[in-house]
Length: 96
Image 1 (tube, one colour):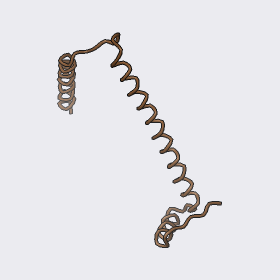
Image 2 (cartoon, helix red, strand yellow):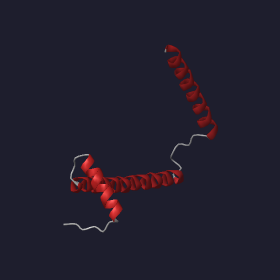
Image 3 (cartoon, one colour):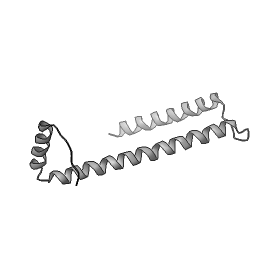
Image 4 (cartoon, helix red, strand yellow):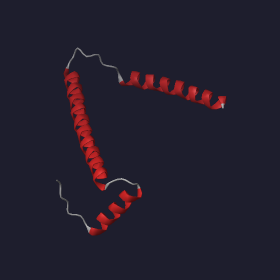
């Protein structure tokens, strides 16, 4: 058993919408609760993953054995990749 205090207008609107989709209000509330729990779990998992990635990056930034790519090389590689993607996009657009 789970008791909630709701504003009358919200309760009435919710019940009307539940009735409109031919579903019991309790089923919809359970679905909302499952979605909320899933979203929170995913958010915690993502946060843990992100923090681990940052920690790894910090460790690697202090590790002299990790290969470094000069900024100019990264920019050059990106410009080349971007040019190739633009050519591909234009080719695909012209095929239509």
